[in-house]
Amino acid sequence: MRPHFVIAVLLSALPAALGGLVAAAEEMSPRALMRYGVEAARGGLWREALVRWERAVQSDASNPRLRNNLAVAYEAADRPADAARAYAEARRLFPESKEIRDNQESFLALHADLKDDAAPSLPPPTSHKGKVTRITLFVPTREQIDMTGLRRVLVTRLVIDEEPPELDLNKEMVGVLRRDLRNRTALQILDVEPPPLPEQPLRDLLANTGFWRRLAERNEADLILSGEAGFKTADRSGYVQVDEVNPMTGQRVRRTRFVTREAFLLDLHLFFLKGETGELLYEDHFSGEHTYEGAGFDRLSGLFDLFDQLSGDIRGIVSPGVRSLPRSLFEE
Image (cartoon, rainbow, N blue to C red; front, side, top):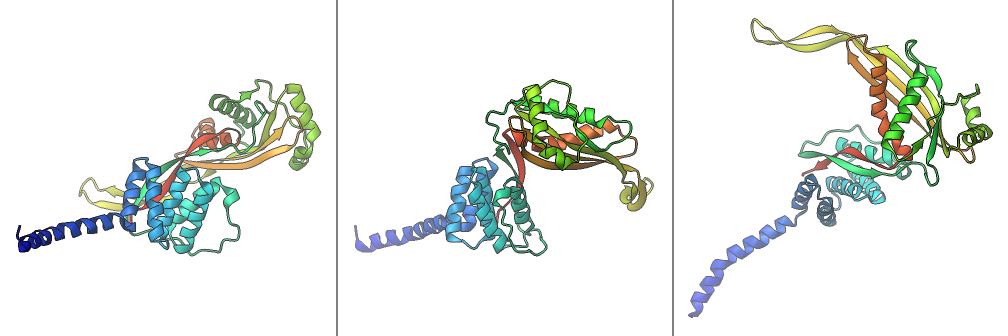
């Protein structure tokens, strides 16, 4: 073969080879790795997404959007300490991002022990102008109490702060707590008459370990669930602006109308005490509000709707589970 022909062949192949190298470099760029990671996360391939974003951060360590995505992947991999560091760095680099703020605050609500109390104040959040993917992250959650040896649960009557006159709040709350724990955990919920509580200031009552210990002994309970509750309604009626279509002209017009609304509010403070010692193991406060159009909505149905909103968090105190969490991923 003549030399000039060999050279011509090599030169003709050079653009294709260079093109392949350029394409490979682009595929390895932080921008491409970010995009591929999002595609993997959409398909539930979190390990693949994690590998892509870790590689991208090595090349673009100051990119807060990559740090955010990496934090979400660490959550999916059950690496909360790594997720906390990645969220903190993303927030430091992009403090005004609403998406990063929402992700981090939702994460810290589940991992209060990883919260940095010395974190500086941040500017008002703004939404990202580029492409953002909303995903649902399914995260395993651990119980808040060490439940070793605690299987038999006694639910007492509650201290009632406020209730509508037509509703027996104590009876209904004890019933719904029992049913939910019996049907949706592996615990044995004792089917006995709910014991009444002595009329003491709440903090004095919680400190009365002898009372709780004797109560547990009589009922052979490992754990006692007690608390205080309040349930009330509120008028949320008012004037609102609504868009309507004029049936004669077909034009859309904005009108002001008076709308009747009624809100139900549930406030629940729960205490978990160890039967063997009578000591307080854990306490938490829950509250919820739901507004209905119109008036005269059934109070009991409203109470049950509100409890359904809180029940997952309540079960999570004594039983592991899986929680679905909204998260934002940046595509660019």
